[in-house]
Image (cartoon, rainbow, N blue to C red; front, side):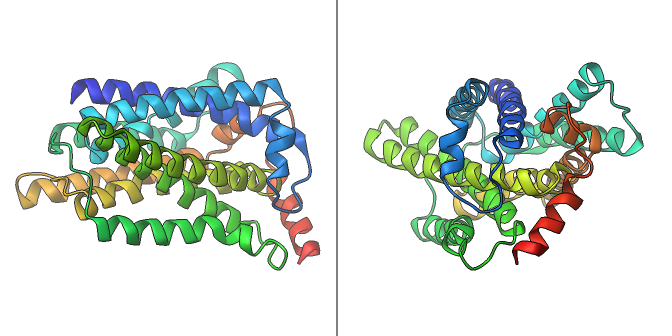
Length: 300
C-alpha cells in the first residue's frame, strides 16, 4: 500500500504539471464562445500543450499502476496532493501571497490523506458489479456528453464544468477497471476500458479547456477536483466491493477524512494563487469570470 501511495503521488505531480501547461495554452488558443472539438485541433499544434498532454498520459499510467497496489479509496485522495504542489509553485515562482484559506486547504488535504492512509483497508477491490458499473457509466457518461449534445441550443459554460467533472471521474473509474483487468491478465477488457477512459478524458478535457476560456479557474477547479476525489471513492465500496475499514468508528473517521480532502481540494482549487498558476501567471486572471459571464449572457 505504501508503494501505491508513492506511485499515486507521482501521478498527482504529473497531472498538475500537465494541467498548468494545457490550461495556459487553452487561454491563448481563443475561440471559447462555443464548444467544439476543433479547440483541441488548435491546441494540438502548440508544442507546450502537447508536452502537457504527454505528461498527463504518464500520470494515467502511474495511476493505473497505483490502482494495482492500493484501492480507489486511497489512490484518489492522494491525487489531491497535486494541488499542494500547485500552491507551492504559485508561491515560489509567481510570488503569490499564500493566505489563511490556502493554508487551511493544505492542512485539510495533507491531514486527510494521512488519515486515509492509516485507516483505509489496503485491500484492492474486484472488477465491480456489472449492474453498478453500467449505472455509473450511464450517469457519468450522460453528464459528460450533455453539453456536446446541447451546444447549439444551450451555451451555458457551467454545463462544461459539470461535463469536465463527470468525465474526469469516469476516467478515474475506467483506469480502475483497466488496472483490475491487467491484474487478472485479460488484455481485451483492459483495452476496452482504456478506450472508454480515454474517450471520457478526451471529452472532459475539451469541456474543461473550453470552460477555462470563459470562466475563471477559481470557479472551474473546485468542482472538478472535488468530483475527482468523491465520485470514485464513493464508487469503491458501492460498486467494487472495496472495504473501507474494520469498525463503524473507523468508517466514520475515514469518511470524514475523505470529505476533508475534497473540501481542502476545493479550497485550493478555488484559491486565486492556484488559479494564477493554472492560468499561466502572465495576464490578469481574476477578471476572467466577469468577462466570460458577460459574454455568456450575450450568447444566451
